[in-house]
Structures are given as structure tokens and as C-alpha cells.
Length: 149
Image 1 (cartoon, helix red, strand yellow):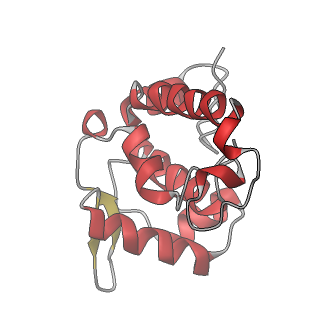
Image 2 (cartoon, rainbow, N blue to C red; image 1 turned 180 degrees about the vertical axis):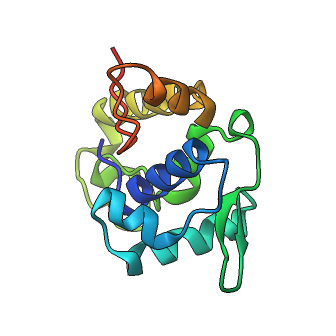
């Protein structure tokens, strides 16, 4: 399973904001650190604001910050909110399923179980867990890259 760039940017934004709680951050700050498009990030930040996870402050000295404590932001919920679907194969989409094997195929059950396991792991992680890991020695706090061992 692969996350969309939108979800990737959402998670990067949350991690960045969680690691820089002492100040307001700008969209440009986050875009520069990660080398991503400011325009794409604006869409991400807008949705994070609507979700209530991020607070935006307008004005000359404005910016953004986490509105919720990192412990309150569940990564599974973030991924579910930012991904459009979890269709691992054609048979998962009832609107376009034309697979002739679907009525007797066991693959859908296997892929469904794999997706559920994937989301269960994400449900067990909060933003606080990601920030804690990023800040450890050897972690790349400057880019908030997460590598679980």
C-alpha cells in the first residue's frame, strides 16, 4: 500500500508543527524544509485547519501551530481522513468492479485483512510517538524522517 503525496505532506506538516511547538510556523518554512510545493501544502494546511488539528493565525506575524496536543492526534485517523480510498484492487470498488473472479476469489479477503492490519498499526501510533522518535539521537529531526526499527 502506498500513501498519496497529500497524506505524506499532511503527516510531514503535523510532525513539523509538533517538533516546533515553541513558535508559529509558516507554510513556507515547512515547504522549504521538505522541498515540497507551497501550493500543495496550502491545500493540506487548509484541510488540517478544518479538521481542528491545526490552528491558523492570520496577519503579518501569523502562521500555524498544532491546536491539539500531539498525544491526541491519532495517525490512523489522520491517514483515514486524508486518503480518498483503500481499494487495494479493482474488486474493492463496488462502482467499478468488473472482475469475473470476484464471486469466488479469496484474494479480496486476504487483501482486506492486510489493509485492516495496516490501519491497526497506524491506529496504535500518535503524533507524540512520531515526534519522540524523530527527536532521538540518530533521528533526523531537521526533516522529521521516521524510520521504525
